[in-house]
Image (cartoon, rainbow, N blue to C red; front, top):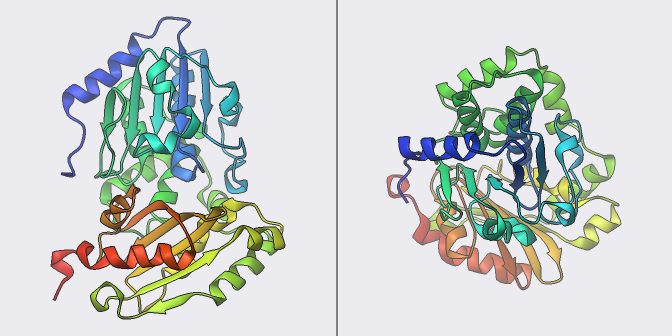
Length: 342
């Protein structure tokens, strides 16, 4: 899919959906299952912006258990959240954040049909263009970039609450400004967010540098079983490991702590591709993949039923861990980036 952003008509259509809401219109904000910093930050920041516009009847939610991961429990706007079971069944407008496909909406996917209108804000190149109106910009470093641009069109000023949400989203998806998506525009947005008075050091410590001791022990165990396959990906190398439900139970940890594990695996010098399998049910895994530049892991993910970005993607795998990795291994050669070959 070509990496082009929203057209002028797309922006106009999105604005119209919000401007034409009746005074008592009900708005439902939805982000993807197992929400990360960009999903929650974009949704809550945008919700706070809509509140400043005068939207009174509004809920925010995500599929699955209504548990906000510990690193994000200090985000402004959490009062907007309701469990999926309590979300408006037929809102006037549903707005989806950071979800590349309908499958990422879980049991809330039916709102796309029951809502009066649907708007999708996203930055995944693999977005399937589900829903009604799309603001999908694969060039954006995070969905929060798209959300901030839409709020700016309504003249909503950035305050500290909105800024903190968007800053968490931006730093999460740029790896604290370490990934290739970190453009001059990203730093310009970060500067505008910081100008509201938010404290980046406090935010970063809370989001990136704080985890329970049990999670530290869990990471050590899971990293200790990592496997390196130097010949995979046409010699570029693959490193992978897995974490089971038993691992989580043994260390008394919640699944969200595993989201940061990929960063400890991807630093392996001998491998371009890194992969972490996180068990979600017997025979089922949430797969996180990263590439340093030689492999388009979004092609691997799409081929296996998922999606994502060129250098960061994922999917749901089924079977034994070795079977899932065999399926990944079988897609790597076809996903080599031509400029990286040779």
